[in-house]
Image (cartoon, rainbow, N blue to C red):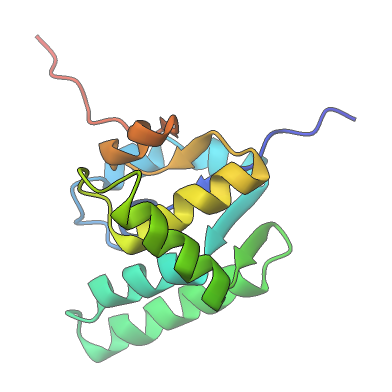
Length: 146
């Protein structure tokens, strides 16, 4: 059986698929086949970032965002890595060490550590900073047509 490699699902992708007015919505739509065909990994921290973004929405959209997270968390297709104290401490060390001179957030550092531990090299994100850690950033801005 030819198992596809796992892909990490970042908050940029989650936001773009939930908020169709988001600047990355079209790029996310172009990657639907990746989302539906490959094993998925994310973290509770990524869900936190997604919900923080959605906090500016009206109540019905906020409820919808919670439902979206609950559906992903209960899916057999996605592994959700819990934020343990050890993982957060490792993320803090990376934030203050390897990624000190980057614009990566603590959650980004934790995400990179999770990807490294699982041998994941592709991320459904548009965050170019992930490439500092050798991660393939799959969401690309549309190219201008002449």
